[in-house]
Length: 505
Ligand SMILES: NC(=O)C1=CN([C@@H]2O[C@H](COP(=O)(O)OP(=O)(O)OC[C@H]3O[C@@H](n4cnc5c(N)ncnc54)[C@H](O)[C@@H]3O)[C@@H](O)[C@H]2O)[C@H](O)CC1
Ligand SMILES: [K+]
Image 1 (cartoon, rainbow, N blue to C red):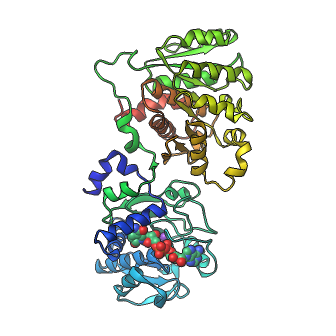
Image 2: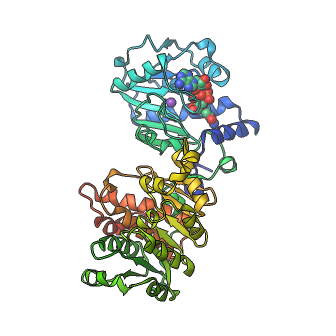
Image 3: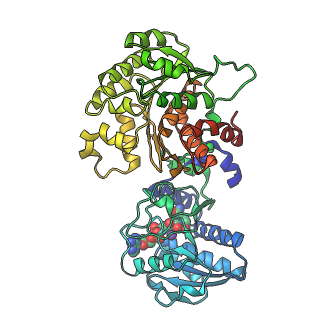
């Protein structure tokens, strides 16, 4: 199957491999008969081809090789570039005699001189290939390793990193001391979490993945449930419009509103739900807020909710098939009671903002509710820590992925842990890392819109993990399409452009 065909495979193109699962894929492939050096040849060729796609043959290329197989990839890339008449030099961190296994073989195949990193002047080159460290990085860079990374970053050249920018952890995106700021990163077989998690995501530059002969079957075999978020992952699960569609087949989302000074959040959420395709959307509001909403709503409907009894009366109508609670709903027991009432009705729910903060300090009360119905919770870091502040002992040292997984398991809910690199974690252990986050979303009310968008997809029958992943990606894509000056009200209105661009009916 060509990479192009594989990319069409919904799950495959989004599968992320941890460093350990990549190593297992490597070992399995070798055990099936492909020698390691062959994988390295294909890896090095993938890097060389990226250079050849972009730069003319008179480009002066310096390949900086580390002491392991990342360096091995570098030697192969250097040889292939030289065979294609590129002007190439190789500098080695360490000594050639210390090279082992495939890296030593790759160095053997580089028949030209090898310089030490101390001998070369970066100014003489146009492009630097960073083949210092990849999956084997196991401690902060120091000494000569740190020095050459700092020199590479200071040289102002185009930098192509092999597998992952040196100094970045493939699993967490964390920086070990310093890291190469790549212009491009070419990785192998599958993307790694560190390519999408900050700060690593800011160091990879333009990211591409090349096939090195590890089969999709092997990748699926070692895959541990980590996905990169994008249309490739959930497009097939998105509700599609059929000729028979009418507003009732597209679901009815209910959004609960706060009091008279806090009605905008509910309208933002409701608009997000409507724009993402819910057939009907209703806001349930306290009597004081009803006239405020009434003067501003058109397609979105409005019901008065003076008490929990009123809410029970409203959701007795089973056509309300998704409920969004939280945006400016108010913090306290009142909100806890509203959440409990909706859980009792057994509808899929989205809990955001105040519906989460209201349970700070009573996490188990929340867990007993969320385990009863299909739930998506959408905390940002602050809300997460308020909710899980008693679990700090356990969570200390946890990565962002591990914290999201812990919460999803604890609450038996899909957790959207928002941030520059939003993580979506399902109770079954699957994790989706968002790939298109943008600081444009750092403006009041965008979280309300996201909660509504998730509710709108749940109303259309989409399952929680896929609905949350799709909404997170479409939400950021809408912001990117709008650009500078974005405010929350713009996000729902940009959705048609994004849905059209991604051919999502
Ligand atoms: N399927 C695959 O996994 C393939 C991987 N390829 C490439 O191999 C590297 C991983 O190679 P490895 O030898 O395991 O480690 P590195 O080359 O990344 O690191 C080299 C070596 O460096 C030492 N080290 C670690 N941290 C430091 C540090 N901070 N300072 C100094 N030295 C350090 C440590 O001993 C490491 O062993 C992978 O990234 C791919 O590029 C194959 O090419 C294709 C298949
Ligand atoms: K590297």
